[in-house]
Image (cartoon, rainbow, N blue to C red; front, top):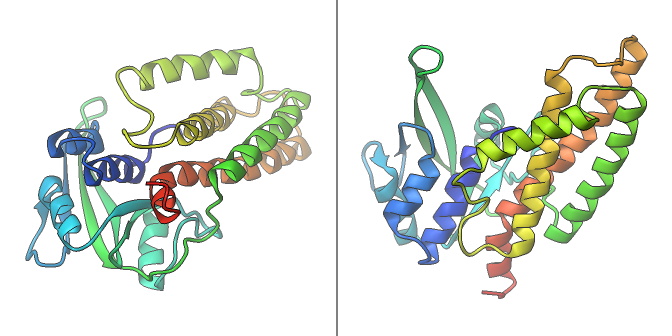
Length: 262
């Protein structure tokens, strides 16, 4: 949750490209981010891996009009619709992109090389067939915003009561510092997304940072097994809600197209 998922970047900037709001070069540059290179393997009509620019153009030619995101976790197939082979690959990677307009999905495989501090990252997106069906457990933007605010409030109360790291001003300072670094020169979402999607994604990312800070700073004041269990119980549903909100935000572009807003 600390970092923006690769599937989110690809879907958001791919949607902006499909809508004609950004150039292919700008879309690919934003989708690749800090990685060295992204390639796409298994694309219909291509005998081997191709670059992201060609792949997005090919997807458009195949009838793709939008891209959705899936962020599944064990026991929670968030954003997936099958078949089992695709779901299993997506679950292993913990993310995937689902095409709207063609029964295809993309799952990333990440390769890293080099010493700490100078890691070279390459990503291969594997194209697989998907089932054309509603994605699992994806809320509307309005539902996601309400659920996230409520879950955050409840979890903060529990964490504060347990004196857990991640619930006080030190955590807030850490979150603000991280966001300042992470968001310098970066748009939260690509052009074309509704303002509410940007707001929901920002809140989901902030909640994700809060959870990460709580985990990374040890057990704080929760020193008994019972208190540690309560902390985990408080964080688990919030983390799940934050992932649902992320998916709702990234998928808002396609949802609006389906409703005829665009």
